[in-house]
Length: 299
Image (cartoon, rainbow, N blue to C red; front, side):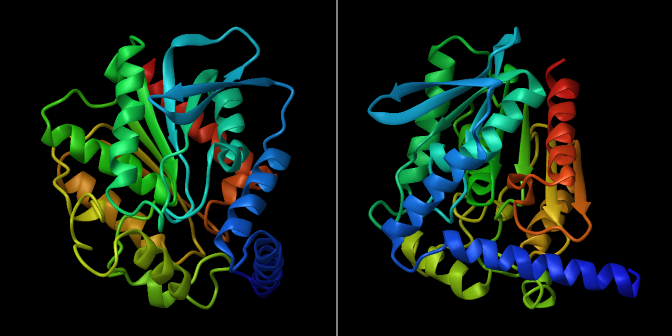
């Protein structure tokens, strides 16, 4: 990277850090509220319509393109937030873009959050959302499961769980900056700690404490990186070059390919954790690549 380009990248990282600090609060309720506000603000689009749904008492919402589109194929979206924050509202900064770009209905859901509802509450909730789609008549292979950060973790966990139960698996996985390894074994946790403008180990440790404590971190339903990936569906991964979770994605791709799974990763130069939420041109390009993946898998 040239000196001028490196300076621009450093300035951008400082800007993102300031913007992120506006959303982040030490009070978890205020943190959740600010995220919801951000999601509604960034996810406002005239091209989609939102319809609330109830999944056995769990709030959910359909984000649908207003134009004619594919009705019998869907994206099940798992929001991020370290298992302690996040919601359908927060995820609209991504689900609206995915719905427009892919021409598919996107189902988001409010899984129970820690510390009020620690592991395995979210695992049960994502399977409830999956069962809901199956009962609506969607074919398992006609569904892409997507997610960002902890939502990427949850998407992978869902497939591990379905596979263990001998059930049909989704058509594919589309993951943005997935948090796959709660043991933090990857090199990027050290290599990227001084450049990541969004995440740090202290924050991740707090999220881990809220969600699962200090035990069972290598359980594949907690850290899906340590699971068996044989017969996993095709998986597409996006990650930013400047995030401490970079290794979580790189190691995931390695394990998927070692298991004979169709897997692809795009590492976006100079980008940060879930940069796709932004309104930068590169964010839309990344979403468009996600949409292309759904076209390749679902036809």
